[in-house]
Every structure is written in structure tokens, then in C-alpha cells.
Length: 288
Ligand SMILES: *[C@@H]1O[C@H](CO)[C@@H](O)[C@H](O)[C@H]1NC(C)=O
Ligand SMILES: *[C@@H]1O[C@H](CO)[C@@H](O)[C@H](O)[C@H]1NC(C)=O
Ligand SMILES: *[C@@H]1O[C@H](CO)[C@@H](O)[C@H](O)[C@H]1NC(C)=O
Ligand SMILES: [Zn+2]
Image (tube, rainbow, N blue to C red; front, side, top):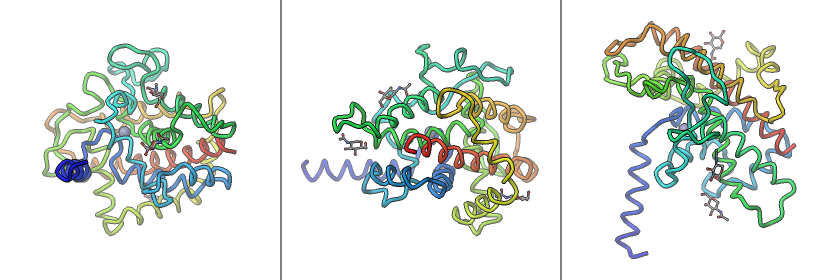
């Protein structure tokens, strides 16, 4: 590469990192989910993850959980895999009805992608060295999409693109509703309660996983389907939470502030916890 092109490529990477275009939990949401997940991995799963992680992850899955958002422009085909649209106002999710992309291609949604990358990773154990798939990418996609499917507005309505077209104010700033659920609620919680630190937030969620939610954690990972991940359950919970909390009472141009924050932040904590616990369970069962 000529120096000039190398510089331009470097600049591009830099710009993408400082101006992330976000359509999933933001950086901290994905980081939190993967951090929680990695702390719950079995020996076998932890080993497999270490082998598959790219070098620049420094051994931390959380460091690369946002990867799938960063490469969306390079891998244009992957952008439909971050969400699923459900019919306006029904507040339900059905795989056969809803899981398709804009061109109607079946299985091209976040639930289909989770199944896809789960089955690719199942070839890890029986791996002939010439696996047809790049299992590093499969791991990074799966870890990211397990997060996205737990973000209520990633299972939102097609009409408003999961809240992306609903313009509101977050306190005094203009913002769209989708972004508030990706990032603003988490950031405001960090500023208010955790010294602006994502690690403080993670510790608090981990504490509740072991105390407040111990009885529920077993329920979260129950999965009676034939697939390893229970995407029907995760997506149905998300659209329910989207209707009950994210969309509820929100009109175009509304100002969402302290009251919206304090009533919604527990929902965000719960979804981050469930995303992390379930990602660990799925990886443990893939590599177990
Ligand atoms: C499945 O994974 C392959 C390899 O990354 C990709 O080309 C394909 O689009 C994926 N399909 C879905 C539905 O995730
Ligand atoms: C697998 O994907 C990763 C991430 O995109 C890439 O760095 C690596 O070179 C790929 N490996 C192979 C063998 O293509
Ligand atoms: C932990 O649980 C307590 C008690 O229900 C709750 O007040 C607090 O907001 C929770 N924190 C997190 C991060 O889940
Ligand atoms: Zn995403």
C-alpha cells in the first residue's frame, strides 16, 4: 500500500471509531453484555473463545463485541441481520411471519443470524482445518447479535424503523428514540450512578445477577426448542418491552427526561443482564 493510501485507510478507521453510526446497543451496551458473558464461560468455551478471538481483542471478547457494527459498511449484506421488524401495534413476534429482510428473503434477520452463526460454530469441535466458515467472524457476529436481539427496539415496528424515525429530545438534546435505547439511557445511568464508568455499571449488574435475580437466572437460560439459542423467547420479550416501555407514551417531538429515565433504566439493566447470561449459556452449549 502506498503511504498515502495507508494514511487514508487509517483515517477512515479512525473516523469510523470516533463517529460510530449505531444501530445496536452502543459500545457500552455490547461491552457490558460480552463482559458478563465471558465471566460465565465454562473452561471449554473459554478456551475456544481464546483460540478464535482476533489478536487485537487482547483476550477480551468485550473488546470486539461492537465489531459487527464497525464492518457494516464493508459487509453491506450484514446490515439486515442486526434487527427484526414486527407488524405495527401487534406487539408480538413470529419467526415465520417476521424474520426476513427488505427483499423478503427468509431468515435474514437477527434471529436467523443467531441460528446461522450458532450452527457455524458447532463445526468448531469437528473441525477439519478447512472449515468452510471463518469461525472468528462467526463468534463476533453471534456475540453481537445476542446483544442486539435483547435491545427492545431491535424488535420494533417497521413503520418507524425501530424508533429510528421518532425524533424526540433526551433532556435538552435532539435525539431519536432508537438511539436513546442503544446508548443514552446507559450513558445517563453511568454518569448519575457509576462515576461515568462502564465497569461500575457492569459490577452493579453482576451483583444483581448473583443476588436479586438468582432465582430468575435459571429461567432465562431455559430453552425447550431444538435450537441452542431460544430466539423466539428473546425477540418476543423485546417487542413486549418495546411496547410496554420504549414506545409507551412517546409522541413525536416529546421531551424524555428524568421520569422516562428512572422508569426505563431497570428494563435496560435487565436486558443487558439477560443478554450476557444467555450469550454465555449459548457459547457453553456450543463448545461444551
Ligand atoms: C450466514 O453466514 C454467512 C457467513 O457469514 C453469511 O454469508 C450469510 O449471509 C449469513 N446468513 C444469515 C441469515 O445470517
Ligand atoms: C477471519 O476473519 C477475521 C475478521 O474479519 C480476519 O481478520 C481473518 O483474517 C479471517 N481469517 C481467514 C482465515 O480468512
Ligand atoms: C439492582 O437491584 C436493585 C434492587 O432491585 C435495584 O434498585 C438496582 O437498580 C439494580 N441495579 C442494577 C444495575 O441492576
Ligand atoms: Zn448491531
